[in-house]
Length: 586
Image 1 (cartoon, rainbow, N blue to C red):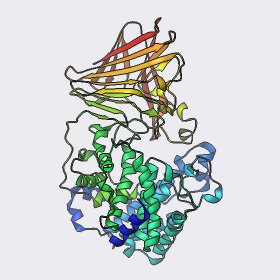
Image 2 (image 1 turned 30 degrees about the vertical axis):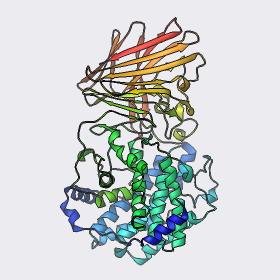
Image 3 (image 1 turned 180 degrees about the horizontal axis):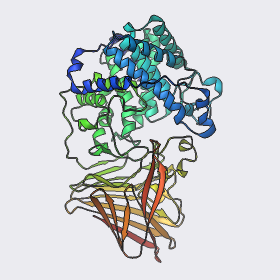
Image 4 (image 1 turned 135 degrees about the horizontal axis):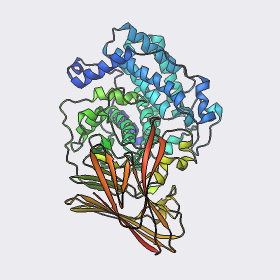
């Protein structure tokens, strides 16, 4: 989108009113009443603001720890959200006013708004210290947007000094740096949620604060460039390969910006007309497999909680959007990063007249991401192709997830603990990111390698009575002895079984170690294996000639919880060069 189009759109519209009113009709909606009840209960338990001390700040460089500084940082953002929402609703409450002014002042007094892990350039190199103050990352952009919307909600109820200080900081930390064409930010070329969150949040701040048409045109031109990079990161199937949480995060900020832009230009600049945007919007329902269980490839997670305001807004834009059941919606404080704009829109965009998603799901092949979703009466099978250079990548080409009667049995462990090593050249030394933690084999003692060049080839898919995913995976492994590795997974919908068939061609005989991952205990019974999760059992039947072992691996998940993965390893060394490994799963 060029500057001429942007300026024309701006001139076609008018500045947004710097006000968001709380409507008493919100009190008639049970969901919204529950959210404010939660806010009021939480407010009674608030402690004093913890300082963002240098001792906390330096830990990332000294130990790799991100959590101690970030926990204190997020606690302030929680407090901002809490008191902004409460004062917005009850603006005569002097206690809410006092607390909001103090946390607003405190955040605006922070030396930097970016987090320690993000003081890097586009090559991932550390920035010189003199550039720290001007650094804009995800959370600096979010903070600026949160403060701007806090003022839009509560400015009439706050002291003039506090308002003026906040506006000065927004101008100093957001407006002026982003208008400076000599300053380059890595998020401007990062084709993932970074471009959407930063570009979207900054764009919204510009729309709210910039009155000069030429300055706003320049500002929005840069923000929209980020948004276009974000949209280009998707294939035509609209899949966010980072998982449903990153879909909500990146696409949520995109939708906030697209809505502001549409309002500011009186509908002339409207991203919601874009067919790719519609497809991205429709994909939330694909991530949800059964109940709140979601696809956990890459740094995803297997239980999703969706943003209800965002989803309802999209439902109004695109009637084909289906919402998961209400009980799987996030509460207003559930997001531990306390993303202000999405929480606010859970109130602003809530519509009690919108219906919910049905239980029946359709099988689908998402061709650009190479995700295969096969829904049967008993089994849900999800398999992936792709490559090992994706955003938030795990080395998992050809891996799959299997549910039986709505219960997870063979799993993808999702995101691990984010620390310095997790986003360094040590990433694939970490268990959850390596291929050994996925439902793919170790071949000739080698795991899959990371990089876009290690990818799936010749993918074939069939949907119908017998649904099949087939792919050539030889190029995902560095073994020179491996000529071919074709994986074929069949889901017999009518007879309710899964057949896994791996075909290997070697230059000379070698060892294959098939791996099956579960969070549930695994028991070997002769040549068969039983995985039990609650009352549900999954049985795997092997041919003769396998050495079956159950291994356990401890790991730390994204929430810093100590977890155990159970691994069935089925080893086989055949005297032949051509080997077929077949497993029947019922």
